[in-house]
Image (cartoon, rainbow, N blue to C red; front, side, top):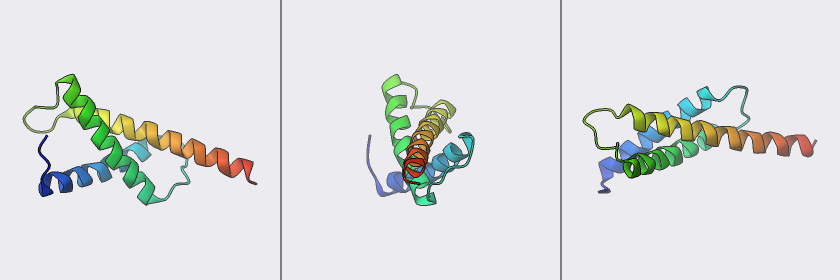
Length: 94
């Protein structure tokens, strides 16, 4: 995988979108700052791309919907986990 400036910018943009979609997919209210959703989205986009490439379906022309679905799924799982940890912490400290 070649790392270029445009590749990094694209990954960040996709990550921001994936983070927002991950937030929308998780039910309930998450007491998390938006920057944390963005960070989770960038990480989920990277992980989704790695898994898609390892599975052999990341090299398609145009938008790869399976890769995008993986990225959103990873973001939703991460948002749910982080929101759950934050909820548990706020309950135990009150």
